[in-house]
Length: 97
Image 1 (tube, helix red, strand yellow):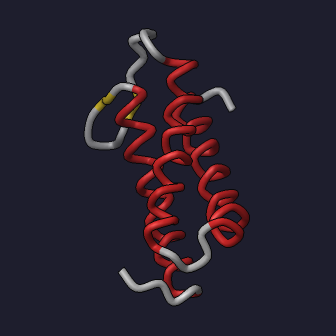
Image 2 (cartoon, helix red, strand yellow):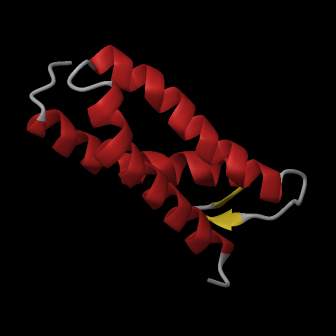
């Protein structure tokens, strides 16, 4: 994986899959408030890992519509990956918002 964009997307994918397939079913179940609480830490972990690599580097990431820094690229791709998986999880566990 030579592309920093692909490595961040892969990291986000792995983190989201581990969260929704392992962590959330065990710790949060079908409680929306607990899922939201744990998701703050899970997404923060993703930002922390990427931040350790790219903070202050000045590297720009291609987000299709514009170039952004590491923080926004990580946050937007994390949200894009998480949204369909969260919808699936909410339907499977019958979580009401």
